Image (tube, rainbow, N blue to C red; front, side, top):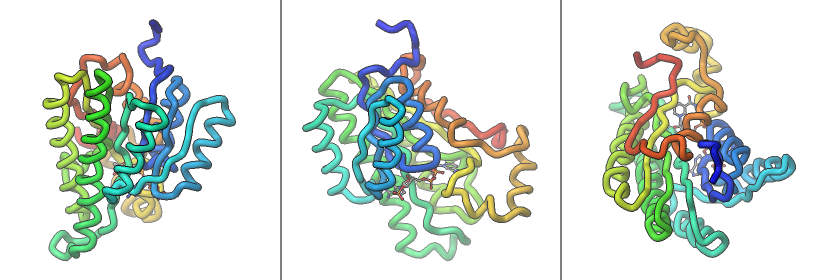
Length: 254
Ligand SMILES: NC(=O)c1ccc[n+]([C@@H]2O[C@H](COP(=O)([O-])OP(=O)(O)OC[C@H]3O[C@@H](n4cnc5c(N)ncnc54)[C@H](OP(=O)(O)O)[C@@H]3O)[C@@H](O)[C@H]2O)c1
């Protein structure tokens, strides 16, 4: 047995939204710790580029496309994992949608549906499928990427914030009911992180400066600064941590 609490050698890990941003940083760190990583997002080519780069650096990775807002895609990726690997040790639900930026009263049904389908239904059924495999094999770890918006709704991001609050409760519900099967379920709540997702804010200097001024560390986070918390939550380092939601925001929500 390894004395390194963060060692993931031999573990099979699925990371959604791993073609760029926070998910790519998570996939990279888990692979660096020895896991075989299934890099997933909607676009296979982008996932394959990440997986190929990991393999070129001596890590173990493959790509598989899955739109987590589509139930057929969820069924397909778990059929693939069952057939190819026969087990899943780690699931990181990270892919999310935020199609609407505007006043909550003006939220249109299509944006509402997309946000809920990806961020709530997607996380839920990915967790349920993973949970069934993990129960059968005697345990596993699930991490959900939520957001600080789960605690304090972001301006003009009503429905997105609401789904992220749902992810926090979902984390605790799965943790409670799946804990008896040796499955730990925890969440990462990132603050402002430099990715395409938060691009609009980085392009608006006045808005950006206002945000940064509210962050005690006086800077935004980088994707790799989110990955360490996920490594902690999926590894033996956190073997007694279950249902926890860890905020990584430079102190924004103090
Ligand atoms: N950046 C921030 O400031 C921030 C703050 C708080 C929380 N978060 C959360 O962090 C997570 C990652 O965001 P990010 O900032 O890293 O965003 P990002 O750089 O835009 O990456 C998003 C990833 O999700 C994939 N994706 C989008 N929709 C998908 C879908 N329906 N099914 C499967 N994959 C999908 C994208 O690839 P494809 O286009 O190929 O699908 C991409 O790999 C999200 O849960 C987000 O809510 C971000």
